[in-house]
Image (tube, rainbow over all chains, first blue to last red; front, side):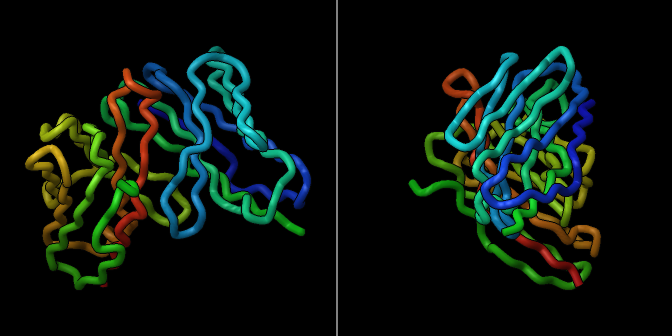
Length: 113
Length: 116
C-alpha cells in the first residue's frame, strides 16, 4: 500500500520562502507529483520528480530523495494568490490505477500580508 | 479542447435517491480516473479506465457505485441509494499513456454531491 504524510497547515508571509515537506512509503515508485488546489477548484499540476534531485520551475522548485522517501516543494517570493492546498502524490504499483496517483491529505498554506 | 469537463457541478439529493455524474476527458487521452475528495482530505482513488476497459476499482467503490466508459470517450459514475456519507466532491481526471509524457493527470472541476 501507500502512505503519504505532509503537514496539515502552514503559514508564511508574503514575499518570503516556504518549504512544504512530504514523506512517503510505497509499494513501488514511479514518480512524485505536486499539485496546487484552491478552495472549491480542481487540483492543478505543479511539478514532477522521478529521479533524485531538484526540479526548478519559476518560483516553484521540487526536490526528491528516493532513498529517504522524501520530497519537498519550495515556493519563493510568496504571493497572496499562493494561498491554497498543496497536494503531494505518488505514482506506485497499487491503489491508484496503472498511472493514477495516491494523494496525501494536502497542506493548507496561508499567506499573510 | 478546453480540458476535462464534468456535469453537473453541484447536485443536492435526498438519501436513497440515485445520482449520475458525467465526465468528458481531454479528447486525446485514453486514460480516465475517478477520485472522491472530502473536506480537508486529498483526492481518494475510486476507479480507472484505459479506453473503454475498467482496469481497477478501489475498495472504496461499494456495490452501490458503478462507472462506465462505453465508447472510450466520456464516462459516467452512478451512485445508487445514496447515503449521507456519499457527500463529497467527485473528481474526474484524464491522462496520456505514461510513455508519451510523464503521465500527469488533468483534473476536471469536480461534481459536488450533497446528500440530505
